[in-house]
Image 1 (cartoon, helix red, strand yellow):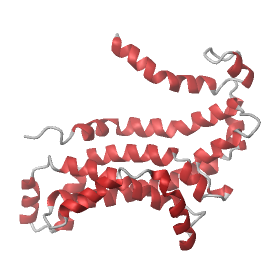
Image 2 (spheres, rainbow, N blue to C red):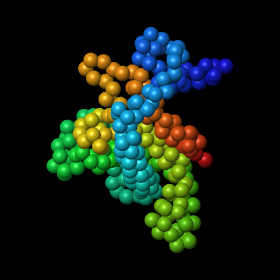
Image 3 (cartoon, one colour):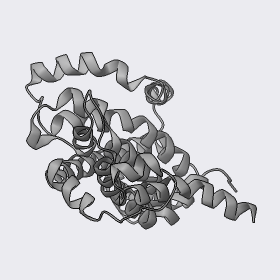
Image 4 (spheres, one colour):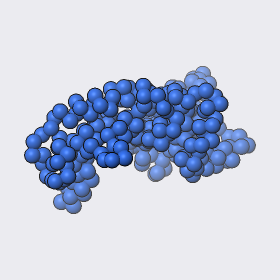
Length: 263
């Protein structure tokens, strides 16, 4: 019973969002917690057209997918080196990556803007892909290193006896075994990349390159907010997040607990 109540409380904001997306502005203000007097299905088509959600959705998919691929590959590769190989600067390098988790992301907006302006990559997908990857790498490395410590080294030794080098071991052994940890990193990275507003606002000015969070802001100005269209647009934007979580939920649970118990 307690779990059912907890589940309801957890899911209610999502349920409220979808119900509100079918309301008129009058219903939203007058009856915020009730069902719509009349279900406004056209809210979705209006929101799609006004905000240019089709273009924004494409941009968000491109930026998020590219940043996730880079994060997972580079993060897992660095984690393999730090978890398995022994070298002098291993401790300081690991500490440096962990320190990267403590840097306030938004404090870097100004220096990043200046750097990207000099590089000539403002108003491009790279202006988002590169910072997203850089700031997510410390989390990816930390999670995957913790996971790889639970993988027996005998597996790699057997692969090396079979003639595999470090790259062969990485792609044939480590990469497949690290899928649960990478799934955890993937969902955390997806949520950050997909919902980011600050970086996209500062680094992207072209309408054709705007992502979903930027497109949602079009319904609000200095005089008011069209909540019926805002809720409809937010409902559209949250659907990919739900789908990604449902696909990876089993792997996420495995990745979260892996490495916690050894032996």
